[in-house]
Image (tube, rainbow, N blue to C red):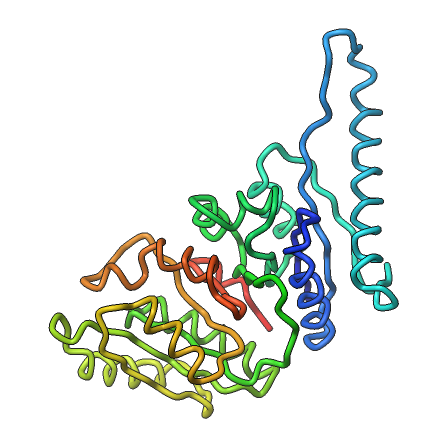
Length: 286
């Protein structure tokens, strides 16, 4: 059975992501695995080597119990060990722990909350966002705090007209089909720098050669203010989710998919942000 991995730091800002992950798993008929990454037990000079295995066992047990309590507190009657697998992970690095769990469970998504108060602040804000997305074997879905789950009807994909975008959109289509949602593909171009009309037509034809989905719409916006224009567009079309491809290389619109934009969207967006990289979308099979 397919699996979604949810990562938490137990902060109140990760609660919305838990509820969202639960609803999404139900709709997609997926297992939901709840994960928390905790550090290694503290070893003192007076301890003997034989005590370490018991310390690690106790730490695992304590974190498993805390995860169960977290689910019970915020899911209430919806909480069930049959529906949700509890998976605390011991690792000194948060991102490595989340990635290891995703690989172990063959996850198709990693779902996390944004603006965490402690451990996921590292995972979703600042430079570690880049590391999580780069290392993840699957797309990363970031859920803003206080958001309520709604069945996605309108998804937006922000494109920079790259071949990798076509593959990522193909995987987004597989998700959209599960919800019978429309996908609006948008590109924002500084008019004086770029002939966006020509590239949009090329990209549209190229995409339709590889992706068969009737509910696709295309939009080209000329603006010098990429982030603000994208925010406004998402509001105007009442988007329920936005997908973006983060990549190392940059074209002559390097501003468009610079890591700062991806981080900015995840930090400030009021809707879920689904981040792909050049390889992780290959693991996503809905």
